[in-house]
Image (tube, rainbow, N blue to C red; front, side):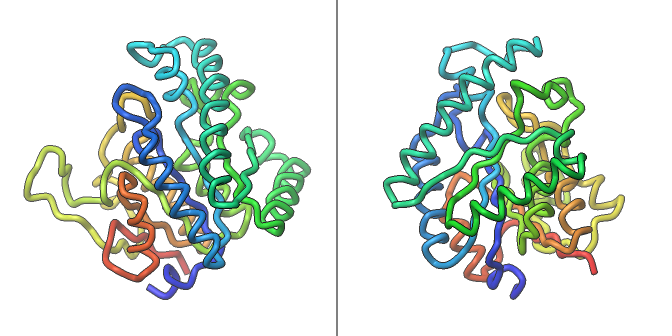
Length: 265
């Protein structure tokens, strides 16, 4: 557990299901508690980068739409609306604990381009060096690949790529389920949580289920995919339940929580 408890530079990914109510509207209690815990971890000497989903989901809720639209242009518009709302909330709550956030919107083509990648890394280095908390999302209003299914893989995989970009010590994915199970816990009451995954192989990938919540895009499949990206770069990944942000304290105290995907050698 030393690689977890002693980690300093950490990427935390939070999903739509953690940030919003089933209606799509922002879950104020969850986001406020999340900001409080991350601010406290930052005070303790951690260097946190937050990868945040939720722009489209929050846009849906803000406009009181019954469901997430299927048209790409509508999703782009909702992302623009929701991203404003998200950053307003992050700025407000982190500001209450004397921390400053910085918005970083990425597109896959920038990360894949050597010059663009260096520019992004330079930006992260300066922000982290200044003690800022970068808040990262994919730029849905410019890049439609994610909306059409050909993206970083979604924000789970984006978080793994960010972890590699900033040479993080750890990737933590907050989601609506408390780790990887030997079978779907929503269907089988006797499903058992897998505390540690030594290596991600075909058997582990087969355990991952389907899509996530109605307002999100991911599921356990994308969590395992992200873990594969990070662990192959030597960065361990933890998947834990995000509805109680204090679970982050539990994780960094070295207690048994969620699923830990060990870093590859």
